[in-house]
Image 1 (cartoon, helix red, strand yellow):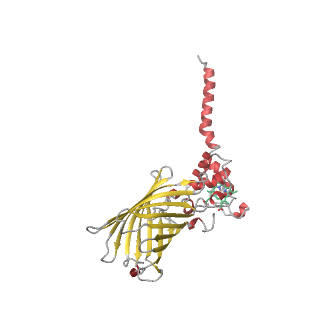
Image 2 (cartoon, protein in one colour):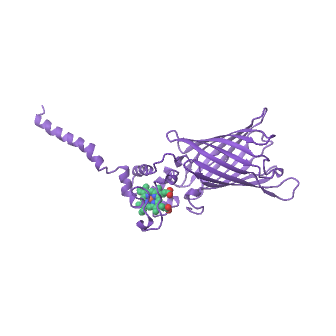
Image 3 (tube, protein in one colour):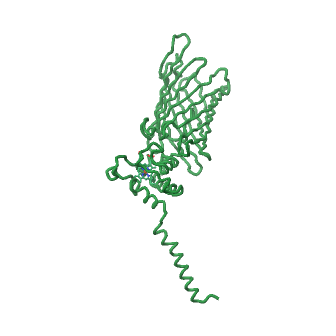
Length: 370
Ligand code: HEC
């Protein structure tokens, strides 16, 4: 039998130990997320994450403000993980942002990242993970600051080349406006050489309704107004204004794959034109080369359907195999190319070769970060 004395000693010992675990550890949390951040990052980024001034730092590169949601929310975890692990240059930033891959374990980097994520406190801003790769033809749900030049080449039939200039500007947490203008260059019947002319001007508005981090889904609505500024007689314009409301939905799938869907209606304002229903989907997956932090390649397969909403109206289906690749180290300049292949009535519609160059201008100048 245990003597009462021993019992008292053991009880005292166990109670003290429990109290130490319960109270003392949280008072000196050696490895809490915030403490790790404080030890490794605060000297430059500040304890509150808003960044110390260059004068205080002793070098002239500014540090980003992690409390600014407009900046912080749009950067996906994977990019920041890469920068913390390998240092600024891995994403085309300054080497004053040191590499912590040797000093910290992957788990500790994740803990620090979790802490940095608490610094932007406004949940209204959809996280950058939802900014899925831009496909040809399917509008993404995420509001963006982007400039895109898309070139479409049609070799057979009416030999033509179209460059479309698109400017997207994000405002507030969830909205975006855009304007685009195509420049058509075509060899027309009965004319010598190539004819040139601007096409129909498009104005657009997009708003993100909701996103769900658990399910990995994002839903937005938008509308485009297409104005008949192009010369219809030369095939450079539709000859009617068109209003095009749409719904855009995105879903993050396991293993860096994703699905994007867009449903739209086209209402021409003049009679003699058919209303149309469009349904577009794209599935893709991203692979990174040169280690996990290198160039990103995203092959995608798109399916485009459109139906004229009159009785006996035609339905068209197209397939769009395509490949997007990040061109520079910062990954804010990307390129993509693909083919739009008619799957139905291919005798009357031609295959098009399409490619774009995209610049996410919020992330820096077009010549920065190569
Ligand atoms: C010696 C100073 C210094 C330390 C220490 C430091 N950073 Fe930085 N960090 C910088 C500078 C300077 C930049 C900006 C580089 C640029 O814009 O070219 C930067 C940029 C970043 C970025 C890139 C943001 C973007 O623009 O996408 C992230 C993320 C970041 N730091 C996280 C951290 C974390 C987390 C730690 C701690 C583990 C840390 N930094 C420690 C100086 C530092």
